[in-house]
Image (cartoon, rainbow, N blue to C red; front, side, top):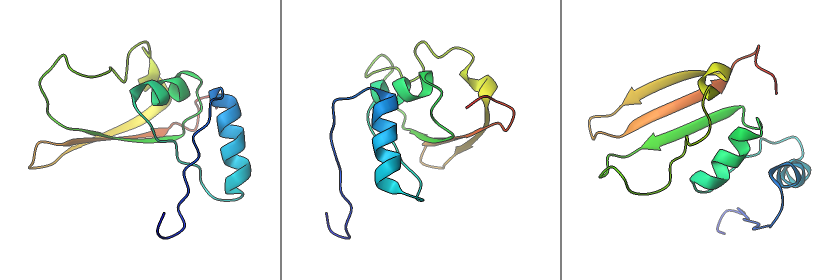
Length: 101
């Protein structure tokens, strides 16, 4: 892409994918992108330290559920919620220092 951004699409476990991404990133941060299923897998494996979710108002009952099967996840994160005038809500989750990584 313009500016040097490269995307790699792989078929691997979340642990293997993260190991490959960390190796490629060197000392830089690794960002995980994808749909709810991808993000849910990384959250379930306890591999995310920082998460920013933008929630856009839509008709309920559509799409995939991001939080499905992740009960208690909020115990590992400090969560800040900010709503904008347009109705978009931003959730920012930072892993608590005391939670296991």
